[in-house]
Length: 231
Image (cartoon, rainbow, N blue to C red):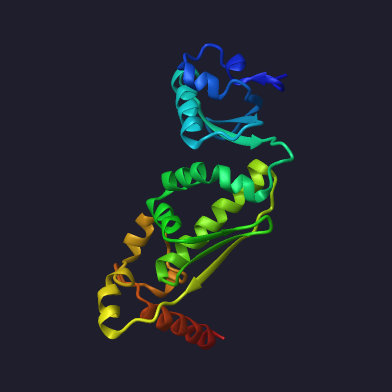
């Protein structure tokens, strides 16, 4: 049984630097799970202390290099935390935000940019993310919301709602022209490469058609008209 065995008791052959050994000194390996249809292995760990993202990724890198690669396997680490009762959802957010931000940034720079420009209001009942209403912010915001809610549920067993709130700023015509590049001329291919898809991608049939608030609205109306005609 692996339960109650520490990380470097299970992987005792891995040559890890002393700093990394100290970080994971009290971290237990709960189980190893392998996929039947692929070479993937998940290393489930549990800690009573919050672990920073870069340390988890460094451990993952070492395990793959010195242990799983010889077996033709690739491992990912799945974290679970058993924190003391003094931690509330709000305090978990406070102490884990830096690591969370780093992890989201590793997924996409858009996620980091979204968090940096967002007003964050924290309570034990919800996390409010308030930012400017733009096409990109709406789509990136939904992805950030999904990621954060999954992390809190899977790692902390906390069902913490993430609420998105968007506001519009009044612009003069001159200011609107200056802000224009932020809102338009994102092709489908560009949005896909950025990890953001149009809400109704079937409405943009021409290769590289620019996505703007205007043609998004027209596209939605066109799609509705087409559905009515088909009926």
